[in-house]
Every structure is written in C-alpha cells, then in structure tokens.
Amino acid sequence: MAPEYMMRGNYSVKSDAFSFGVMVLEIVTGRKNNDFYNSHQSEDLLTTIWERWMAGTVMEMIDPTMSDFLAIDVRKCIHVALLCVQGNPADRPVMSSVVMMLGSETVSLQVPSRPAFFVRNGGVKSGGVSDDESTVSVVQQDRS
Image (cartoon, rainbow, N blue to C red):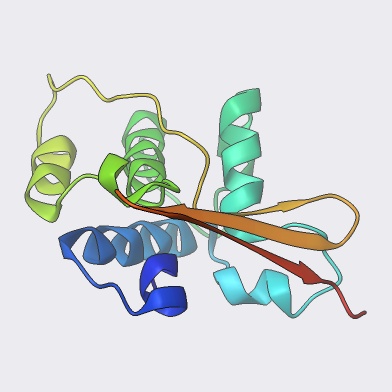
C-alpha cells in the first residue's frame, strides 16, 4: 500500500506503481515486505534492496529457488521496481511508463531515489512522504 494513501488517504495513479514495485521486489527476493517487520531484522525489504542496489550487491537478494533467469533481466526488474517505490510520489513512474520500461531494450532508466519507507539501524523506523504541498515524516520506536 502506498505510504501517502496509508497515512493521508491520498490515492493516485502513482499509488498503483508503488504497490507494483513492492510486489516485484517480493517476487524477485522470495520475501514479503512485512516479513521484515515481523522479524528481528533492523531493516525492511525496501531498505535492504535499496542498500544492496547502491552497494552493487543486489543480486545477492535473489530468491535462491529462482532458476533459468538472465541477470540483466532481473536487475532491470529490480531497477524499475525501485523507481516505483521512490519516496516522492511525483518521482514514481505511471504504470504505462513501467510497461514501456520493462518492454524496451533501449529505454534509459533514471537512477532511483530512496524508497518511501526506510529503516535506519538501531530499531527506529523512519519514512518520509512528500507531495506538492507538504512533507510527512513518521518515526516509530521498535518495541522488541
């Protein structure tokens, strides 16, 4: 669920892109985003993939049961998914652009910015959501 919808009830075509991005990341890794919240890990799925992407080690997150795939195709799916879960809804692509990005061999993809929700080490969950008029930050203390 897109964070701007969850926190303020704002739904747009960018909300669909966010949900699609989360779903792609869950499929590629074989993990659910909420599994990270229910475990003792200090980071969520989006943060973990984002950090691995930035470090160049994102392919280590691939579901080990996946076989017969081209690394370039999986990397492209992750790249597009990260574009879909960017913190600022205005930066996310609309679904028609997502289809074009996934279906084209020649389209050049932008560098994704930080996901909408991210978790810093130390058990404090932080996230920011921005739209044209306001910024909302959420901080939740980990209770484990």
